[in-house]
Image 1: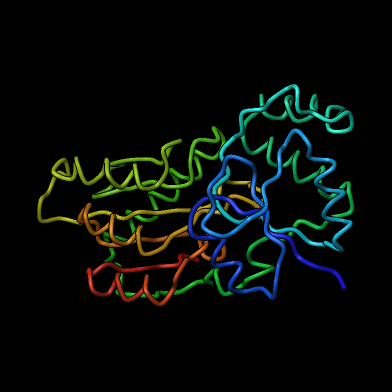
Image 2 (image 1 turned 60 degrees about the vertical axis):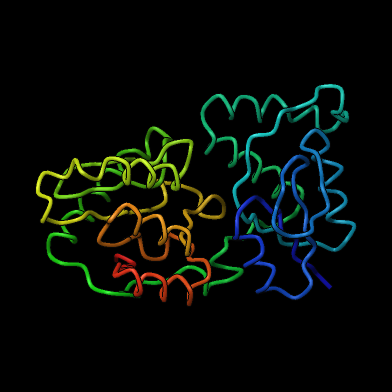
Length: 265
């Protein structure tokens, strides 16, 4: 019987995926601290690890959560993994997206199908619609501007989010992540030109051309809490392109805070 393996990263996504599956095998890169019990493996021994998955009847793999670029130990490479190092290093020089695509290609070349979160747990990726509250016309315009900004950032492999208030960009997501972007917006929220005008919108979306089997943007209760602290009007995202964690609590928290949640078509 074929099995599914989860490559667990940091954050809440791995536990959410585990809850959706029947007894998956769970692994994590050595050095990471996922919020699920996971057997560690090293990137320097990637090919033996893939053999291990196949030996345990794994046919499908899903990546779940943030994965930091590991520090490689040259002495730990096995001969077969060493042969693919030039491929991965060349991809890493192009950017994180290219490096991830190269790793996915290695998995697939071994006979393992890499599945997206939407394929494995479709309930975690909302389709178009309002989940809480309702954006005003001004909020919709801010969301549209933020969407243009996020799309423009994609070509530079910078981030997957932006905050726009009253037509002005207050912050964009970079390496520190969404929480840092929201903290920045909270610190400088007084810069909005009209104190009584539109409060602003957090918008998230995958990068244009992104492989959606890995590194999809994620939202959840913590995002709502920080958006409320930044005094935003709400959160919008690309429908079908963003993972929503703990859906019921996220919606309840947004309603309690007076924020809208909008999966934008």
